Image (tube, rainbow, N blue to C red; front, side, top):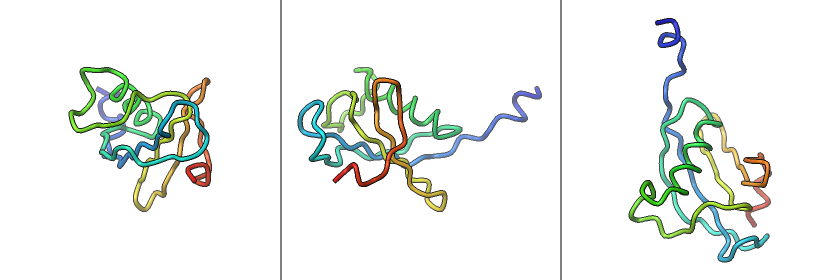
Length: 102
C-alpha cells in the first residue's frame, strides 16, 4: 500500500526522435517522429521510447524512421521543465548539448 501511495505519477512527455539518413553519421540529423510517452521520469521515458521503437509489434504505423541505434538523438520537452537532449551511445543514453543536432 505504501508503494502505491509513494509512486510518482505518470507524466506525458513530449518526445522527438532525430536520426541521420544513414547509420553512424555525425551530421545531418532530421526530425523523424514526434509523440507523447507516459512515464514517471526521464529515465523511464528513455527506456519506454527505446523499447517502443525497437520492437516491431510496438512501432506506430505512421513511423517512417528506422530502429533506434547508436548515434540517434531524442529530445524530451517538459514544457516549463526545459528541453533535454539525449544521444544513444554504446553505454546507454547520454545527455548532450543541442548543438549536436546541427
